[in-house]
Length: 304
Image (cartoon, rainbow, N blue to C red):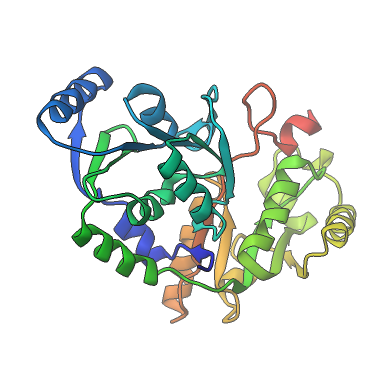
């Protein structure tokens, strides 16, 4: 099994519930599930996600220690762990999930667990239940069947199975911190080469109120190059004079690394690419790197 990468087309499709849903407030959803479990014959219950795993009954809990992507929550007990970066299904998770289902063990996921619903469907037995959350809406309840396994197997074939040749990320990268390092080092999971759009001094003056406190382009470029040299990541740094830069015009770049703060920039870049007749970049949206106080690490805080 190869590592699988989520495309924009699949992202839209998988945003829809995979089976029937229980919607409403927490107590209402919990009661609906309780009534359902009393009436429906089922096997093991697998919950995917921190909310479902902490609030609902289950035999196997799979969670990443966050709700709504960027809010840390207390970890539950677990005996197995795996790494699964966002927007992908890492090839290593299959073995761990198989063990978890066989032994009824909980799994902590370093990264994101959302897409692990799909391998769980493939590894679970018919009649087993898989429950995952629908943010701010309720839960989706899946009862595994042979028909569903075949449908899921087809969906898995639609994932990208090779690393992107080139991926892009843009930013100011002032006072390189752990959030930046996380962003840059994670790029290796997705792409063979990273293109970094680094804001020019002129762009910084236009876009940042505290621009006088920001390191020069030369300083920021040197710091990035030194870090990427340490982690041995193939890269190229391009000077950005506007938000889109090479991401909006290169035919070689295939995906873009984003956070929820910069997602709007990714949407705008793809809008420009469509007008130019270029293929859209696949979005890879990473969670924030949080400090010990559960707050986003930012260059602005460091400048202050």
